[in-house]
Amino acid sequence: MYKMPEPNISIIVALAQNYAIGKNNDLLWHIGDDLRRFKQLTTGHTVIMGRRTFDSLPKRPLPNRRNIVITHDTAYTCPGAEVFHSLNAALDAVRGEEETFVIGGAEIYRQFLPFAKRLYLTWVYADFDADVYFPTIDMSTFRQISITPRMTDEKSGLEYAYAELDRIPQR
Image: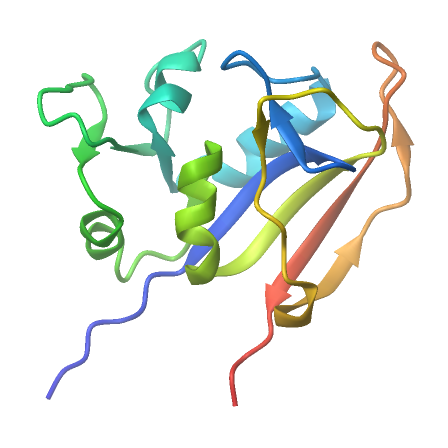
């Protein structure tokens, strides 16, 4: 009997030391290099996000990507994006894809974290006052496969680094 392939879910997020990721439906910082990295990694792939994240995007839908929006609102439509009303429906829609990126917000991250095979993190070395936080990562279930040296954003002065973590296979 044929078994459908597991979805290849990656999470991409920029987070502060205290796991802060947003406030008032906006990002907490602007690091140009991080935004370029986000675009480079996600272009040509599917991105999954919640409705508020989609609504906060300056360009909707994100160009050159398949945009999937998850919302409980059955009347919600967004031209140029596919709308799903559950995590399972979204997971079924991306089975067999090379890599699918979950891009936020906090509740979507929380729901997809158990399915993520890879985390693309931008660690911002500061604490921020926020109303949205990334869920705590159980580091015993992931191994860090790379981290860059600390860099400093010229405009904001913030220090940051990129890290990639892979889920440790279950035995």
